[in-house]
Length: 222
Image 1 (cartoon, rainbow, N blue to C red):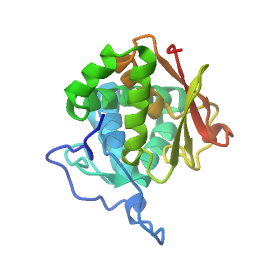
Image 2 (cartoon, one colour):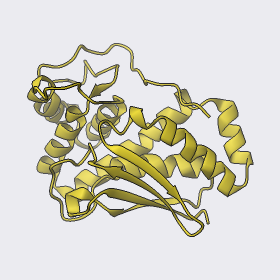
Image 3 (cartoon, rainbow, N blue to C red):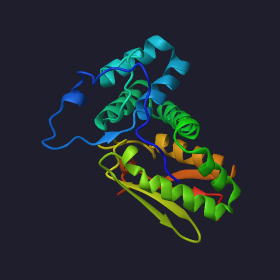
Image 4 (cartoon, rainbow, N blue to C red):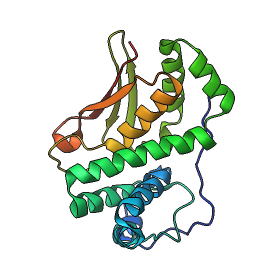
C-alpha cells in the first residue's frame, strides 16, 4: 500500500513569520504534514469558536484560519501549537482536542491519501494480515508525520507497538500523563477503519511524562 504525500490544502499561505519558523537550527529543517496544524485548529474552532481558535493559532505559529499551510510544515510549528493549546486549555481538554484532531486526520487520509483498492484489501484480509499491511504503509510513510523523530514498529504475537524516539509532538514538554493523543487518535482511527472496529491504540509511555520514548500499543487485534 502506498499513501500519497505530502497532503495539501488549497488556498493556503506561505510560511509564517513566527519564531518557530524563523529559528536557526544550523541544519535542514525537519517537516511534518500540515494536518497536524489544520485538523487541530478546526477542532479548536468547533469547540471554542473561530475567534479564539484564530488567536491561539496566530500566537503559536503565525498562521491564521484564512491562511492555513498547504505543504509540509516545520516540525516546530505543530509543537508550538500543542504547547499553546496545553497552556490555554489545560492538559485534559488539550489532549481531547488532539485526539479528535488525530481522528479527523485519519479521515482525511482515508478520503484522499490511501488508495481505495488498498483499503479494500486491508478490510478483506484477516486481521493480522490487514494490520501488517497498514503498519508497513505507516513505516514507509513515517517521513510525513514523524519529522526528525525515529519511528519504529515492533510486531509480536502478544502485542504490537509503535514508538517515536525524540517525538516531535511533545519534545521539551512536561505533562502529568501521556499526551501524544494526536498520534494515538490517528493510528486508532485508521486501524479501526481498515482492520477491525475493536482496535484500540493506547500510549503507554510518553517522553513528556518521563519516558524514554513515546510508545503506543495496538490492542484488540491479537
